[in-house]
Image (cartoon, rainbow, N blue to C red; front, side, top):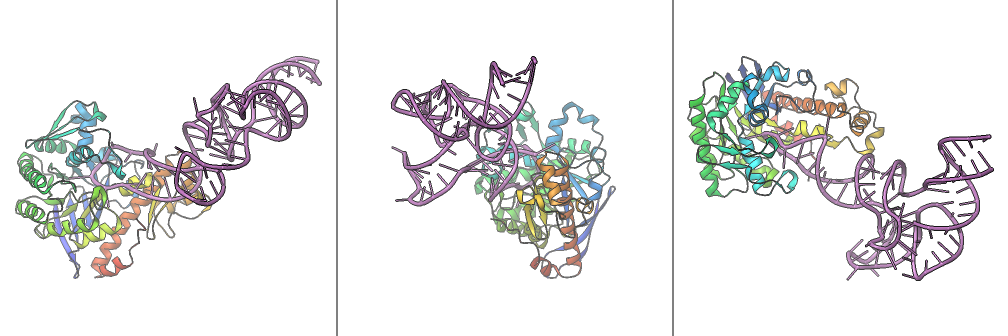
Length: 387
RNA sequence: GCUGGGAUGACAGAGCGGUCAAUUGUACUAGACUGUAAAUCUAGCGCCCUUGUGGCUACACAGGUUCGAAUCCUGUUCCCAGCA
């Protein structure tokens, strides 16, 4: 993999560039579409190619647990996705948080209480998952195994196992876990036997000194790129402002000549904040998950296409949209009807639109940076109409 | 025409003497979703207000039995099935 910066915004850290891999080229800044189990939920094979998607990220944890003994026969992400493009895999680190600390804290998406606790046990050597969704038997994952699995999965970019910081962790715990994340990054680097690009993950929560220390520590090592983790926007009790700060503290110390990925973010304003903070790639489940749930993202903000009032709106999901759904004649009324009928075509059209929209949004941001108009772009970016 | 079975909130469909303004599902309304335990989850959904162990009107219609009826009885209207 090679990375080249080819343009910079004078007013911020924003930059344009290209990531080149054997599988293709990614123009940055770019959105990475989430296909957890080597498929993008809601889409049909062949759909991805129509959505301007440049990169897809899949998940080591869920593929490892789901495949079991069949892991060795896994044909590779591209074959499984039915899509010839650039791929990356997450390390399983996020599940250390989402199945572990998040649940143990009694939190869940949307503030709902989790009823299953004690799934994850973290030690300095690795992580034990006892996940009822996969039989509940203890399964041990460590940086070396994560790399071995990711080599089998065959993405262009792989990530070192980390322990994500959480907004509700104390500074003391965050420091302790940061030590693990750093040690695991180095173990991952030593364990690697392929020519896949390896990213390390910067953590440190919202503690400035820990963030900076993390970026400095990892930044001097020969990783091919860096991901920033544990930021979450305003989910899980943090704030968007925190995320923007965490990004800047990190990019202060990360090498300019390597790509920076911001894990798990985000919404439109988060993307602009991230790009202005020096981020090159993002991944988030929002376009796909929210699409499946009926939320349509547009240049005007978002709306819920399943609302009853959509029944007589015989117009595209977004006016003037060239996405595969809108350009094929999909209307709000039609998509609402499909959702109502539990027809998977409804979520599919919504996801097609959202994925196209987010990819287009990033494309427009790239143009704005090249044209020196990022500030204007921000000024006319959609109001998200949230909160 | 006879015999039997029905008529419950937008719809479907529970309830079959009090604890029923009425289970449940759908629709509808509002909200949530940020390295995917999620085509999911939460809340509301007769009317009124001083928002409460509040008031009112309701289970086809009219009457009756009962301390008390969506629930039992009688009649009426309509629907369905079988037989003529």
